Length: 361
Ligand SMILES: [Zn+2]
Image 1 (cartoon, rainbow, N blue to C red):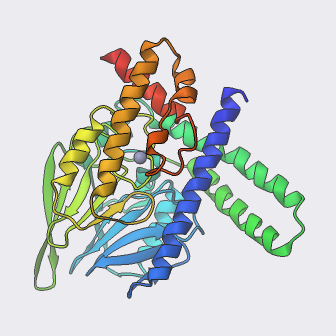
Image 2: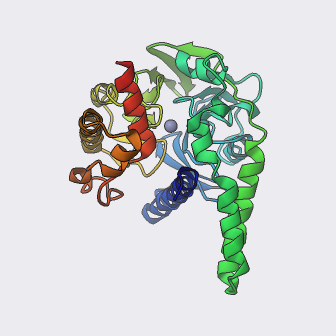
């Protein structure tokens, strides 16, 4: 398999994994059937405290990432805007089923395409808040994010994925399977069309370390803390912490499976996660995957990142190329925590990134 096909296959696999995760989190939301779940065509709003919702997708629109909605007495605060103008519009529409109040703030947990490329469809009077690095990335100051490998490696496979499903459709006779495939093709086609209209839109309010918003709620105020815990998944992740409700939204700094590391600060990430543990929360809302209770999974990610770093460094010292190291690296010690690890190997984008960081050091 040549590299381009390998990337394509990987992209398709990641896209499928992402949609499976969406389905998993959706079905678990339905199984637990917490009272007050609001489902629209495109979104599921799962209440995790009074007026606070973990926002996931139904699969009818390709969102890729989750979001969070916080309802105050007069206005709304949204965390993350999904993957495209199309997905961002779907979010804005879906929110109307929860509340008629206007969105006042949109927070970007980080600059990645799947969390911030819906920014552009939010009304002009919505304040967009993010880390200064997120602004530098989305404003183009550090280069065009649409030309970077992070965006390209996750999107260049979409046309091939559609072609693959169309080929499958051509040979499928079962009516239910055909309908399901046609639905998935339509979702991915809408996604692909919307990717062409992306205009990266940066935060207009930036933070370096931390800030708080005091949202008016009936009978008082709610503190919403936004904090940068150091470099990790990107150069400028922020978490959104609700001290009263003991809820934290982590974006991709902490997810319950192996996150993308293609432009991460893999060596500094465990320290940021150590700071995350100092927050007094019971419920962790990740940017992908199901809600996490407790802090044990943070230890698991720290352990993986530290081993990935040291194992990669050892392979580099032995003279292996990043591609060879990505095939040979043995991370199976972590397969109990991460069932996706089956035998040797790791995401080549993560290994290339570690090589780059080692070369820069
Ligand atoms: Zn990300």
